[in-house]
Amino acid sequence: MTSPKNLINSLNDAVSETLSGLSYAYPRLEHHPSHGVVLSPDCRDRKDKVALLCGGGSGHEPFAAGFVGSGMLTASVAGSIFAAPPSIHITHALRCIAENNEAGILVVVPNYTGDCLNFGIAIKKAQQAGVKVEEIIVGDDCSIPANEQSVAGKRGLVGMLFVIKIAGAFAERGLSLAVVAEIARNVSRNTATYGIGLSACALP
Image (tube, rainbow, N blue to C red):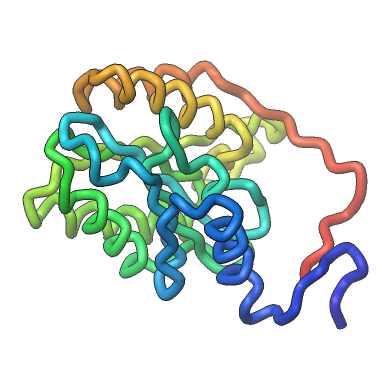
């Protein structure tokens, strides 16, 4: 039974319909429904600008498709609800960006096991194909003491927004991939998030 907190037609189509709705609201966005990928309008306009890719499980909107645009993400890739996107979908996103990019791609990954694994596989494949790719794994959760954290470490939370915004702004200025990646890592190291929920999570 659908939760009263959610207005959805079908659980199986919830993610694709959300992304389709976003592309209808912003027609310049390019939506690839079979891969959960959303591309920015300027994805193919500037070869000399570092591109940013981010993604993860759906259910945390507007992350990440809502951050696609000038000065932020070049593309996003969405998995199922609370599930990492498959590596083949991430590979598709990287290929779309790399078609007309010479400056390189910075991939911002939330620190969850599935995301790190699947993004890592796709990044390795892209690098083996000659694509310039750097990865930053963001873990900004400070709510769990270090001695109580899992082996995976801190979770990636809303602090990713600051990493994306600041890295995107410097990429827009034409800085190199190495410099943009180092700036992003510095932002990540100096960002902490303590999440508070006013009510329990409601799954569709």
